[in-house]
Image 1 (cartoon, rainbow over the protein chains, first blue to last red):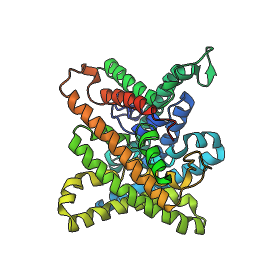
Image 2 (image 1 turned 180 degrees about the horizontal axis):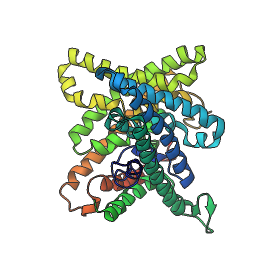
Image 3 (image 1 turned 90 degrees about the vertical axis):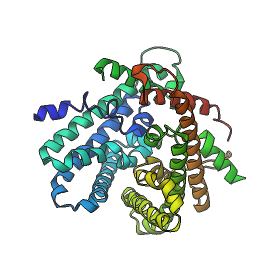
Image 4 (image 1 turned 180 degrees about the vertical axis):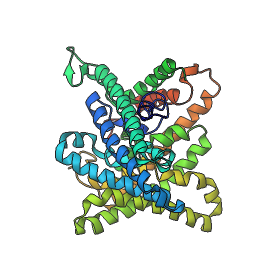
Length: 193
Length: 200
């Protein structure tokens, strides 16, 4: 598969949210607005690309028995790095996303890609795969956040577009489940899966 | 009294699945049958209580005194992974029947974000129960909170499994089958659980 194909497949064909249905917790919890969704997506992409590259590099020398624990340690270390970076440069976003930043460790997308792709491909290919899947994840989160923000707060990327109150439930818990559910149906209809 | 408030709050008002969005993967993945949902919930309850106890002690007696709070994420996930392994080995030895019942769910729990989530929440978040001053939980409160969260997880899982068993008989439109309809049901359940807000 071409390098470009590795990147684009994560956006539709292997979209982690709508097609593979992985990483549902941050998907629902952090998409109260488009910006938060995008922030969470990019934070996950950061960890995913680096973990894919590191794991691709060390995979040949790790014994099969301790494969998963070693991957988890690598991912947890990268998440700790990310926590420091975010605290330093985007403290507001860090505070908003809260507990879901450390929880990137247990995001099944990352361990899933390590196990399914990175451990048997080259460093460059794994980086491309990480970028592709990360972009797909970021895009999905942004779309979900966009819809919830629009319906719940009548705003687009933080800018109010109309007077009055939105349907508050869409920003709260039920909206997360409902919007994701209906968007998934739409995605299936459009891509005919 | 305080413990009762913590329990009601964690089971109903701030249900870990339906209002805090932790542990959605098993919620969608293994909620097809009531019996598996109950088994999974039992395993989660066991591991969550144990891991919260251990991580709480580690945080206050190892990480904080040594000033290495930033190691939290790495240490906690390793503790949980090790605990799950240990629980598996011990159960196999002392209670084969329980191991038979929970066995297949145990490895899945390592990557259940509810377990890591609760372990981190009890040492970082300030709770205000019953209108009191917000503050960090002590050891006993943390463990009670963990068990109550797991009960809330079990409640939501079992309800969902019950609904999905009935759903097998219904004619669901093609595109809605599987995960989407489960998400929509979860949304409606979350709406119902919102009715509990304001109790404590």
